[in-house]
Image (cartoon, rainbow over all chains, first blue to last red):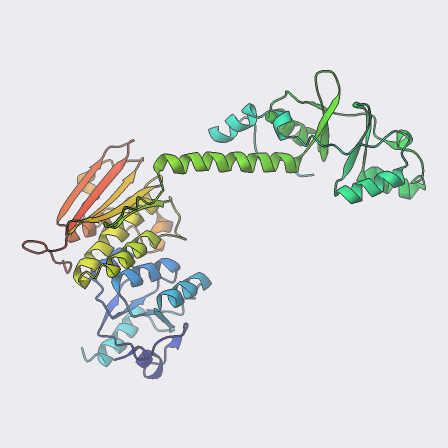
Length: 110
Length: 311
C-alpha cells in the first residue's frame, strides 16, 4: 500500500502535504516512544495518540513514513511544521488505535 | 506600579550574588536629563516627550532640588498651571539612592515606594545618575546572560570538529522537549552522509536518541558526543547529575523514575537504557547518586558476530 491509500481507501484526513507514492510495508501501534524507536520498522505507518513534536523526531529516526493520529487527537502547529520539514505524512481519524490497526492490517494483507 | 518579582532574600544564588555584587552606580543611567527650577512645566513636558522618559530631576550644578514626573504635568493641566515654573510644583519630598548601595537596595526601594525612578546621589550629595526599573531589568538580563554563557562554556558546547573524522558535541538541556531529538537527527544525517548501511545507522539513531532523551528527561542537562573513527562509532552521554541510585534497576526494562507528565508525552517507559544496550556492541554505564552519569555506547560498523536491533 501507499500513503495515498490512507486518505483514499481508509478516508483518514491528511494534515500535511504528502508524497502519495510512498510505499508503506508495515505498521506499528504504540504510544511509548522508546518502544516505537526500538521496534517500528522502516517505511512503516505509526498508529498512535502521541500528538506532539517529539513523535516526529522518533518517526524521522526510525524511518517511519506516515503517522496516523487516532481518536481525533489534535495536531499541534509545531508538530505539523516538523513533519513537513522531515517529509513525514500525518493523518488523523476519529477511530481508535485498535480499529485503525485492523484497517491498515487488512490493507497490508496481514 | 507592580513590584519587582525578585526577592533580595529568597532567590537563586546566582541572582542573589548578582544583586548584592552590582552597585547602583553599575546599573543607573549616568546621562541624566535635568531641568532648572525656573523652567516652565510646559518646557519640561517637551523634555519628557523628546527623551521618552517619565520624570525629570530638577537640579542645578549637580545639586538636586526636586523631581517633576508625568503625574505632575497631568496635575498642572488640570489646575491650569502648565506655564508656571518647576520650582513651584515639583515634588520636593524625595527618596534618593546612593551610588554605592548594592542593587538589592534599589529593588527594595522600588517595591517599597512604587516610584518609577530614583535619583542617585554620590557621597557628596551630588546628582550622578537616575535609576529606573528598566535599568535594573537590563542589568539582570545581561548578568543572567553572562552566567548562562559561563555555564555553557563549562560544559563545552563547541563542536569538536576535526578534519577527516566526524565528531560532534551537543549540549542537551533538561526538559527542553522543544529541541529534543535534534542532536540524534543530526547524527543520523551525518551517518547517512558517510554512506553507512541502514542497519548501522538505525542502531546509532536508537542509541543517540535514547541517550539524548535521557539527558532531557533525567539529567540536570548534559552533553551528547558522537565520533566515528576507524569504523567504530562512539556515542557518549555525560551529565553532572543527579546520578542514578541503582544502575542495575535502571537497566531493568519497565523500570522508570519519570514523572506523570513526562510519561504522558510517551517517554519514561523504562526502555531507554535497555534499548541503547541492545543496539550497542559495547556498553558502559557509570553513575553515582549525587554525582554525574556517563553512558558510553560503541557500535562497530562491521561487527564480528553481529548485533541485531530487532531484539
